[in-house]
Image 1 (cartoon, one colour):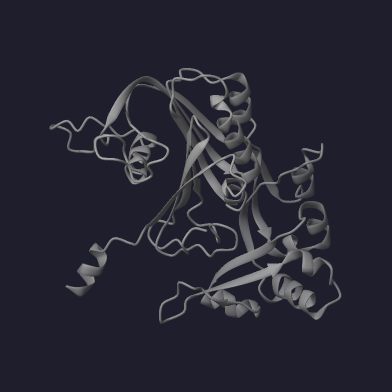
Image 2: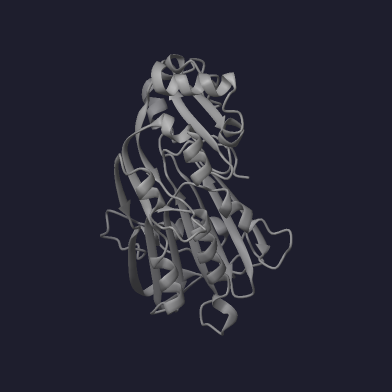
Length: 340
């Protein structure tokens, strides 16, 4: 019975909501986007919109490329050539099971989400420090570990924010391996007669019979992005969900979803453009921008350890209001720290 009870227990989820204004010099919006590195899906929803502007559509189509490299030896990521070409600052973070960790002979620490029996370890290597001390015993040990003691190989997704003009550097650098260039997949659609919750930017917790709260909006967005029916029809045995109240019906809403490996710098551009969406008079009172991280990424925000557990979720959502106020919602699963 105890085993069945544990299986029925839902894993812990944590949702943090806050509000601010993009004009506030203490606003954290840019920092939180820039430090959420491993982004798998970006979606935005614009009520009362039937077609995207050319500028916004161009931004959407320019969110790539990213690269898939098969069987890439881990030691390639600590070579002076790789670091000088691609790395300005950063760390190589490895999440290893107990056996692999012991075989590498490297120094690390137990996962913060280990139980009584430690089965996972975290190894963090400062690449810039390493590149400045190529004659050190530390570099020799790490290089020996990756090349000889435990020559690990992985399939990698790689993305690079290149501020220069050479677009093919990644392809040419890894040309001796199996490397493929990919572009994110873009899905554009118009949702008609969409029932939307009524929101007030100043009321994060909502007001009875006046506006909905942030948590209700978060659930509603998940239903919209998943194409769930919001009608709560009695003969619908798949979903009984309905739009929170009070609500209003918009004739059409534009929904865009980008799927791939999307860099924070690209998301910053999208967010900035959506912030200026209301520079001209619009019918929509708000728009949303939602970002989901890779379920199996080693970190969520910054260097915060991320664990898969049962869902692996780490995501955030901006609700951008027409007065430049915004709500920021950040969610993580069981094996995660509280969002920053």
